[in-house]
Length: 234
Image (cartoon, rainbow, N blue to C red):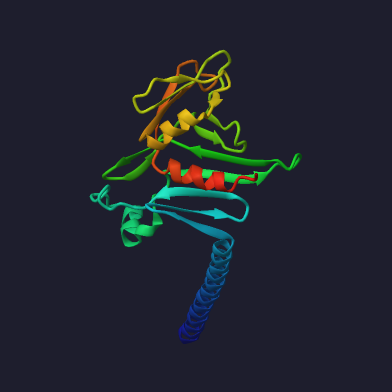
């Protein structure tokens, strides 16, 4: 009886090992399929994108009109950073910065067919140990470049009734926005943005009555705005 039981146990163990190997083969096959599909997706994604290179700024614009522009990676800025993203950037400098970018969208309005060109940029800061860190904030910078005769700059997120937002480029005099947080992006203001290094924005994000102030880098503004204006329909 004991011998018979041992044979049964041995057969069961062999069957279990065979099933385990079969399961591994199936999982491996499925992983290869997913990987192949991912590669196909990335290839299609690359095919639907146009690369943008403006000196030290790089980015892309996709077929749907969304895109971004960011500064090339500078290993000296975060030479002491040991995180995986820092290591990945050091291995491939053309990755650019991961988060601190100009995000834009060119599209046609679904109802009027009017071309809309909008831009956003949020506040980030860089540390030597952890690379870029996004600042949690209720406000950000917003541009509307759709109309060549009346471009708009806004403190996005400023929505407290009765309050006025403000902007300031470097050490130039501060400028008040309208109650909606926006103002006319004049040629004078555009010139300040082109030559400036940072813009300070202030807004009141409902329901909080205390002002929120953020500093946003202006690097790449000239390259980004020139490109988007060149895509504007005449």
